[in-house]
Image 1 (spheres, one colour):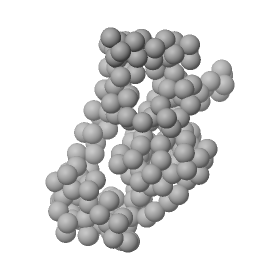
Image 2 (tube, one colour):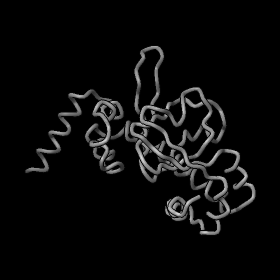
Image 3 (tube, rainbow, N blue to C red):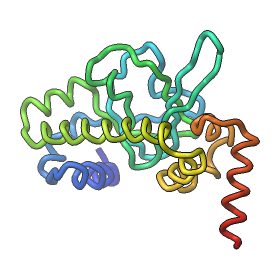
Image 4 (cartoon, rainbow, N blue to C red):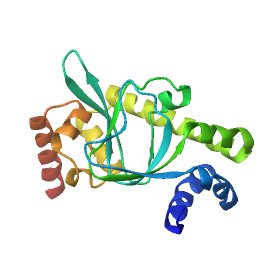
Length: 200
C-alpha cells in the first residue's frame, strides 16, 4: 500500500478507536483499494455485504427499492472519510436490504469480512475497534430514526448539510428530497426560507 493510503487509513482509524501506528501496520496486508464509477454499486439489495469500506473519494447513497411501487427511498449518504457498509448485513453475513450506489466516480479502501474477523480474534486493539464501530453504526441508525420521528424537514435538511457540507453541489436535488421524505417543490421552499433568514 502506498504511503498516501497508509496515511489516509491512519488518519481515519487511529482517532476513531484509539489504534496505534503498530495496530494499523498489522492490518495493512488486508486492506484493498477499489474504484466505483458513478451509477455503479458498492453493494446491492439481497446481496450479502462482504466488505467494510472507507470512502477516499466520492459520495454514495443508501436506498431501498420497493418492488411494488418501483420507488427508491434514500436512507443515508456516505462521503469522504466515512465508513461505508451495510452494517447488519456485514456483521451477520445475510442479504442486505439496501442498495449502496456511487453518485460520483468514487474510490474506497476496504477490508473483507473474514480478514477483519481475523484481526478481531488475534488483536485486542482491533476487537476494541469492532466494538467502537458497532456503537458508531448503532448511533448512526438510531439518530436517523429519531430525526424522522422528532425533527422537522428543515431541521433534517440542516443536519444533512452539517454532515455533508457540499452535498448540494454534488448530487441532484431529488436525491436530497427523497432522503428528507419530501418532494422537490417542498425542498425548494426550505432552501428559500433558509436563504431569506440568512439575508435578514
